[in-house]
Every structure is written in C-alpha cells, then in structure tokens.
Amino acid sequence: MKHFFAIAFICFFTMNISAQNKSQKSDVVKIAYYNIDSVLSRMPEFLAAGDSMWRFYQKLELKMAELNMDSSRLEEEISNNKLSKEGLELKKMELEELKIQRKNYIISAQESFVAYKAELLKPIFEKIDAAAQKIAKEKGYIFLPGENNSDNSGIPNSKTYDIFKDMCKELGIPVSKKKK
Image (cartoon, rainbow, N blue to C red; front, side, top):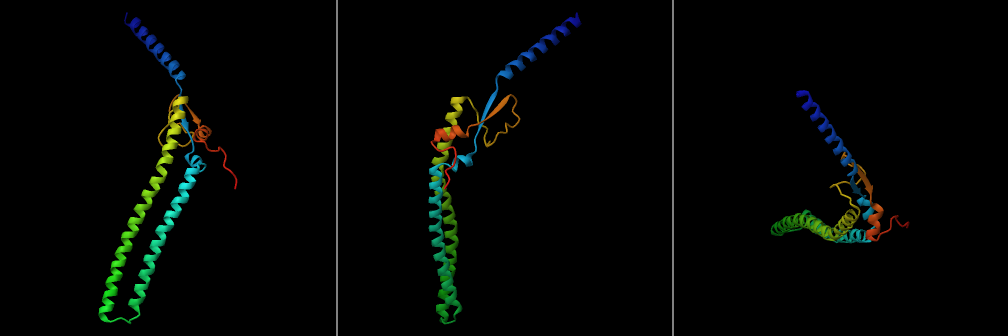
C-alpha cells in the first residue's frame, strides 16, 4: 500500500510539471527594445534642442569671458605699480570681489545650463516614452528598464523585438537618416 501511494504521488507530480511546462511554452514574454540614440538623431525636435543648448552655452561663455577680461585688467593695473597705496588696496579688494563673482557665476551658469537642458529635453523624452508605451500596448510587448538592445536578460520563454521602425513611424520621423 505504501508503494501504491508513492507511485500515485510521483505520477501526479510528473503530470503536473508536464502541464505547467506546456502552458509556459505558450505564454512567451514579448520584450521590445529600440535604440534611443538612433531615434533621437532622427528627431527634428532633438536636433533643434541641441542647437538651442549650444546658443545658450555660448551666451554663458561670453559672460565668463567678460569676467575673465575684467579680472585680467585688474591684475594688470595692480602689477603696474602706478597706484597709490590706497588705490592699490581698492584694486585688490575689487579683484577679490570679482574672483568671488566669477566662482558664483560658474556655479549658477552650470545650474542654468542643466535646467535649460532638462526643460528642452523633457518633452522630447516624454514623446518617445508615450510612443513606446503605445506600441507596447498595441502589440503586447513589455520593456525592461534600461534595455536598449536585443538581450532578453535570460528571461525564460521570452522573445525580443526591435521596434525601431515602429517608433519612427509613430513619431513621424524617417527610418533612415537624410544625407547632407
């Protein structure tokens, strides 16, 4: 009798595992990916944002160049030895104030540039994400965070799909780059 229950249990357990394997094989996980750099390089909004960021950066650099010229002018005035003792002290104080102003400007310029860049890029990345989510929903795909290639990270019963062309179509951008 002991052997009967043992054999029955083994048969039941084996049939259960076999049924699970059959159901798992039919439930393939569809993982989507696309190359974000390729998408971005084709988006007119991204290219325009890059140009705008460059112009913004040039304005910041121009202001920094002005501060550097003022600093150089003061250093030259101090080194000429043509100033009275009081005049020399005033120029040294002015130079120290200018150094502080330059340091503060560097910090604020960096913060301004980062904020400006984020302001320009946020809607672009939101648009890309919305397109990816729409395609995923329509076709039953999932995305893995940070995935940008065909590696399915060892997920069993999965298949990867490159949706680059679908992304281009959804975003209204060309699949191939225009030659200049």
